[in-house]
Image 1 (tube, rainbow, N blue to C red):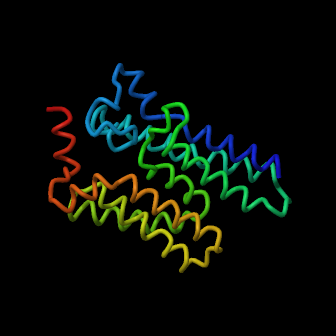
Image 2 (cartoon, helix red, strand yellow):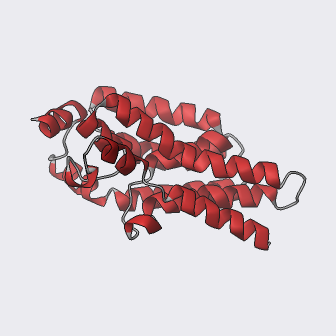
Length: 205
């Protein structure tokens, strides 16, 4: 049990690494002071371009995948392996939202949640990605796509036969993503949320 706790703490510390902020610093930009001031992939893309935004997305997703895979390898054959893997995924996600290195002021967690579910249920990610792309094509709001896919994930997992522990983790992640997007939700309701292309133009304008 002590070893499992160490693994989950390590996952949190890995999740706390601010990939977008570090990449921005490499280019002399503090993404917390540009665009939406968020350290996630969407704002990095708006400020530094799609390539760096994609690197941020991959890095933020990997922050969950790596500790989960490490736990799976180290705990092979152990009866509590699956729970610890879920704990590591949740720990990495919380690290991104509340990073100890940035005084607990982190991102919104979508990319790190993507990493969690890519490891657990890739098929569910494909279904959620389809919904995200449809919303982006029809309305152009990244935030709306993120909110919809996070809310959809527990439902998709349920129909795929996921266990109760995975459903609880997915539900908790969805709730936290919605909480972190509360400003976006307010702007969406007021019709003031920036669309993807326009937001990027404004960041560079």
